[in-house]
Length: 618
Image 1 (cartoon, rainbow, N blue to C red):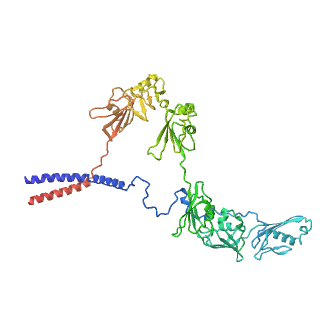
Image 2 (image 1 turned 90 degrees about the vertical axis):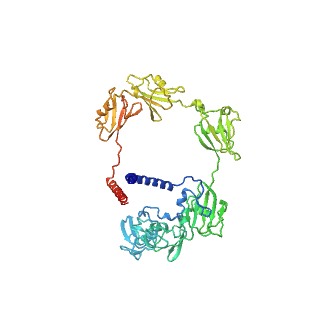
Image 3 (image 1 turned 45 degrees about the horizontal axis):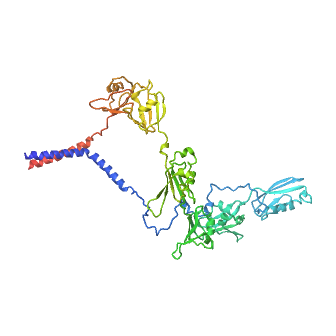
């Protein structure tokens, strides 16, 4: 008896252990899903941003929040040398008369008239060229204009038609192949060293060809040395902003371009056309900086703040009249603030043609704003407005809720000034719709009725039967059991025709289809001829019968009027004309993992045998 009392609970315990072993994998999977869901909820950001900063911002530098913030960190002027896809210096440009000749230049000499001569000559390294019957002629260092005079003087000894008071021949000198200029670039250039450049090069085109200036180099004081002496200084800022092109000199062979380090960095941000870092010279003012930065934007207030980033220097607010007298220092941060928007507006909403906000003007009246918003000048549209009680909502700084002033627009239109009140800033006008002037409610009916079309709802509570009567009733082809009624894109299951119609309802009366549709898990889904009185099984057998995947107990019958019936174990739905029969497939059941089952059974049997041995030993 005692052994029995022990074995029965032990058997129950082992059975529970076996069931748990079988279901454990699925339970673990569910627990993992719950764990992931909880983790995702914990990691989700907490909603509700109340505008309170997450940290103390008093010791953080102020920032300008605008679309310009991405360009603030750019150094001004250096992209002049890099904003191009290729470098093209054209050789077919005409040489000026002051072009200086040198070794490597090719001269083309043309004589026409009584004497005809055409010859090409290269200036050698000694700066000379050789002419038949004339000899060597030194032209290095001469301008193109001077070279012509020298050649006429020398060749007139050979060709007499070039000389005299009335020469009968003419001479012209032009350039063929051109020499390259050897220019040295030192300092903060992208590619310092000795470079060959086009002979027509100026200082800017030379730097352009050679890759430009590093951001560590100055753009304000570039030096050109000629014959070991300072010849010219160049300021790119005045070149860009003041159109001072005279400083862009033509280079000569052997010139040296020196680019020192930049001497200062000043940042300007905010409502400025070119926010960037700028290099400012000594004694330059905010006016100079604003000019270099392209001026203020249209929404700038004119107030600037100067932050010297130094404990000794205070932040200063300056107005435009103080800009010229304020000298900028290295490291200054200048911020140009936007002009604050003035809240000067009124609004009108409701039954008007152009609802929305409008600029407020002093002494603007209710009728003036209504005329701007459209409606009162249109007699037809005016009838759709409820004129007796137009609301003017007026805010008050001393009260919690706004004041509502009722205006009779009919009297205002008649000219009674008490109802055409003057508006105040931030007033809101609300014009309601005339409840008797709403758009008519419509019902659309198509198909087998005598007068299909659109019908207006004439009275409250009008039913589908009333609409069908007004449509002339059904035709002889109408399939009355299959009437389809739709409301808000959803089909209404019709039981009777006493349903109340609403605006937007649509009704379709089809013809007799004469078929039954069978879908789903049958061997031949498709259309079956309808035969009155035939059962559900008849139509399934006509479609080839159930497939091997069919669930014989999961069958739905959809009627033409939208009604749905489900097959019960004790009864089958009646099949009507136009019915659709759907046979669903069996639900998939995961197969048992027999290996895991055998492992769990072995463990249970071993535990059970151990218990038996222990009991017998006692």
